[in-house]
Image (cartoon, rainbow, N blue to C red; front, top):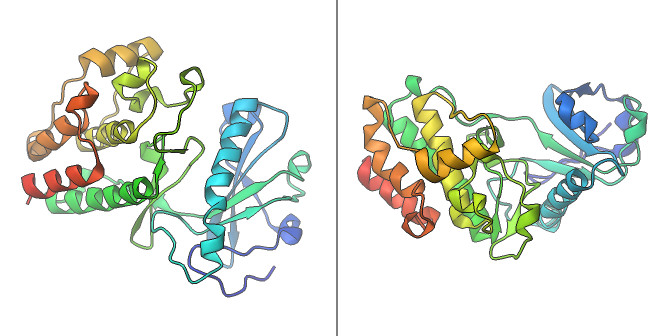
Length: 285
């Protein structure tokens, strides 16, 4: 398998040779039942992820994977030209006809390959306030880029935030959608832990629902503890009524920021990433 000289964000594996790569299955059991397969592999001392989806297994899961492929598709022309690519993207490649001896039933399906990356948010107790602020600013820059390109991520969570070559990157764009796009609320797909109150009431995803999710991510990070609820109803009660922002003493400087990101009423929440960055710089200088 030969990788030619390539632009920063475009991998160039030859799909016809993929049966010679040792793939390690990392899919969660529940995802396997939906036809999703997630692998890791190594090539020339570099690690990669490969994601694919079997056909005719679960319509909504298949739709999500197709949505992600379409999102990446728009950047291929840029990757093959001198145009600069968004910093929030990991190096990637799409294969239209994936061939593998590891999972013969997946052969013929489309696949997405991404460079491996570490989680962005490590243990904040080992970081200074300035380091915490700089890390979160990098994350805000990544999300701001996405929003400026006209997209909402729609499923921001801790595990979808990674770092690669000192860049904050976003992954898992299955729920990505254009800003102001009209979607059927009945088909809303989101993770209850990070859902803004208005989503529980049937509203559309917006820039401000991304901001709320980021607020939950920051809140859990600073508390070094995940929020908990037993079921969807309990999550709705927590986000819509119960959530009160309480921070450890060393991180009280972030409380005003979190109040603006996690306001229960959408009209009282920060409206864009630029406002969050101004507050972060002003309150935690």
